[in-house]
Length: 232
Ligand code: UDP
Image (cartoon, rainbow, N blue to C red):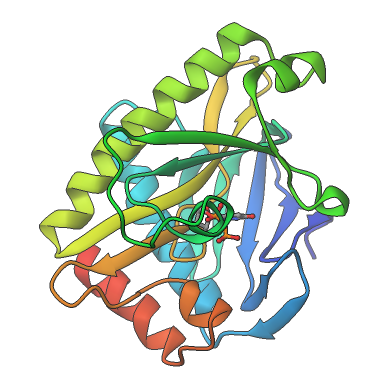
């Protein structure tokens, strides 16, 4: 039995044989609205494990350093152990979700520039939107580290937008996280999946992501299967 180090909403992290590595196990649990809405989506863990594997391998090949080492089984991957930097980096190519609501802008509006946001990872506070100065003042990271992470987020956006559009999918927005390995190097970490991205079919604008769960649109598993099928 592997030793559990941490259990989150969608994944469990276990100790690995090498102290610089961890096993990440993808669950079927789905939560939304800061944990208020909870359910299970059949096979979500299997689908997100494989989708994340494909995207992290691709990003790694194109120079985005990340924690992924290899897939172990249908729900587990071996990753470098990192200390997660408690920030969520959100990148928006189109307006949707919380930004559409907060600023009363119609979903699907294309802004003239790519929008980058950071939120403090703190469930009790509801992951509040903060800015660079807050992050530095809270001793989360330095301005130089922020600059580096924004640059990585921009590169992730360029690579993923191109990858998805070739398969007829618009990358509307997404969230990524970073961590520091034992060398102090900043790596892309966590996952990239329909749980963490908004993905719309480019022909029909059909939502193929977690909004199907958040908004009770049905056919959630089918949407995740469709994303995997197209990027595979
Ligand atoms: N997102 C995420 N985890 C979070 C918050 C947001 O993965 O805790 C993703 C979400 O799926 C979307 C993007 O980040 O692709 C932007 O989310 P938004 O700020 O619009 O918030 P939401 O509408 O998801 O509450």
